[in-house]
Structure formats: structure tokens, C-alpha cells
Image (cartoon, rainbow, N blue to C red):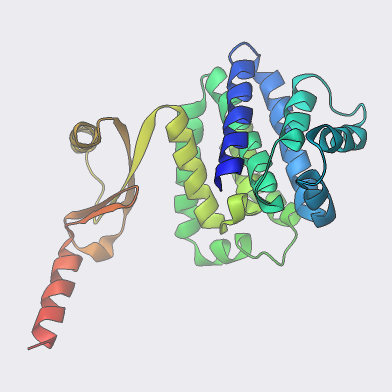
Length: 273
């Protein structure tokens, strides 16, 4: 986001946080659904996106336009958050859409946090991403942007029914719609990171040839937490092809100590002689 949009989003996020601090999880979820419903509307209606972010119109005018569209279907804090977004300054129509969708996701995560389920939701999102990555046919079906989101969401619902919390399934549906303009796998990864961030944690993606023992994982997490000055959650991916060692990805930092990487470096060095 550009500067004006970042400032507008920060103000909206601050207002959301003030609201969720004293609200019940069910009320927060209702607010999240209202935000996401408007995000879907903005995604489908480019003319509305432009009208609600048009700097030539006053903030009051833009808020009134959205209020008229919402009617009595949305009220209370949800309506205030949405009309506040419409009244704010946005650098582009796309950034208004991004902000509305992101705020809806943050509300879903806040509701899970208030319900004491956020850690489990984070793990469920990551595990589902692993399942999808390990099944090329499933990955292809879920990433098919030509297929309607509702159709793919129905498949996700059948796969996760009784195995994941409703908020996890809803977040996967958001990923299917291309959260933040990302691919499905990229959107899932981003949602895992946002869940961790709300718990004031960083995510370390660890690739190993065989699963780490619980004690090993805890030691690694402790070392990374010390290094980054913040609690770090370790997410393991088992890839036998790396042969041994491990690679660790934290943000943009990659530490690759796998045997496969060493063999590749050796092979490349020999080929240059």
C-alpha cells in the first residue's frame, strides 16, 4: 500500500482492535462476515470500487453511497467500520479492496483469538496447506481460478468437515478467492503468518528429511526466538529428497543446511572447472 492507504488502513485497524477488545466472538465473526461480503462486492464491481475511492468526491459522499447500498442489512459497528473505510483516503481502488478484505480477515482472527482458538486455527491452516501441497491433483483443482469459488469452497468444506474449526474453513475460502491478489498456496501461507502475528509470533518454515523430535523442535524454536527477539513458531515440512540437514525460512531469511543443497553446490563447483 502507498502512504495514504497505509494511514487509512492503520486507522481502521485501530478502530477494529478497540471494538474486538470488548465484543463477544460471535459478534466479531458477524462483523468479519460483513467486511468480507463488501470485499466480495468490491471485487465484482470495479465501478463501485472506483466510486468509493474517488478523491474528487468527499469522504461524506462516499460513506453515504456505501450506507445507501448497505441499507439496514448491516448495522452497528460493522456499518461504522465499512463507512469509515469508504470515507477514508485511498491511493487506488485496488487498495480499498485490499484493506476491506484484510480487515475482514483480521476480524476473523480476532474472533478466534477471543474464543481461545487462534493457535489451533493457525495449525489447521498450515496442515491443510501441507495436505494440498502433497496432492498435486487437489492442488490443481483448488488453484483453478476458472472454477467458481463456491464450487471449490464446497470441496474444501467436504474435506475439512469435522476436522477443522469453522473459522479455519472460512479462512480457506478467503484464500480460494485470492486473498490480497495471491495464489491459493500463497494466500494460505499469508493467513498462517497473520494468525501467528496476532499471537505476537514469527513463523519459521523448516524443511527436513525426517520429522524433528518434539524436543529438537523446541530447541530450534528457542534458538530462533533468541535470534529474532520474538517468539518463533516452527512449522515442519518433511521432504525426504533433501536427504538430511534442514533449511529454515523466516520471513525473507533463508538458512539452507540440507545435504541436497551441499551436493548441489559441490556439483555446480565441479562443473565450472
